[in-house]
Length: 311
Image (cartoon, rainbow, N blue to C red; front, side):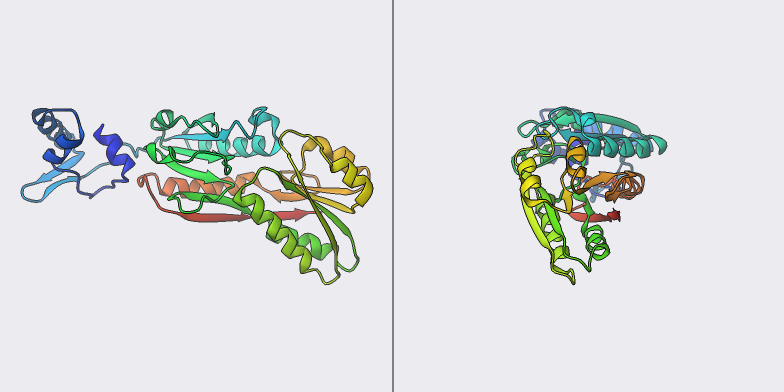
């Protein structure tokens, strides 16, 4: 119980722990039991007790060399399962490859908008979460003693490290390549609202506006997770875009490429796309995660990984 509390509060080596009387106040054990426990911890070399000064952590047993690292996705977003989504499949495979090759244990799981398995997460050192939207309840995140990291999203005002993809350089490269002639662009914007979805649309519009030759841009909303084409077929027939970009379900590619050129968001793709190399991205993510394993609450920080344009 003490380990979980100290881990949750981000205690590190050298930090002062609560006094025996303070511990009694928040636990259900007697003073005798608490005193014996602290003596045992001192004998094991986990704490050091100094008369008149208190007790201090010498070791943090929850930050060992072998770590259990979990990757959890939102099942309400990826309803068919993560391995039916090409982007998430490659993301989780790249993450697992990095964790296992570094000698750690990898755990894959899911959560929903309303339910997060925080007690399961307590048994892990790190949980990496993806697929969080505005509908996801975040109040339980603070309950887990595991380190929390957010991937492909930025959660404002929460003390977590976030790892996002910066697609703006890729957008700029595309518009630069096709500049000199006026084209019709169709951007497929995800109907699943998130900070990243909004940031990508804004970046795409900026890159379009920055073209020397004025371009035509149309934006429609799609649900790239369920694969429903919605109004896409109608817009393709009426608007006749030269390029279709953004959130593209893999099943739409033949329909789009029959009359336009598709540039989806993609991981490790050898096709035209806004490309992210998963191995390189996961190396950046894991390096930061490892550096914070002894600190339950490293604070808020955003790490951006640049995407490239593959014509």
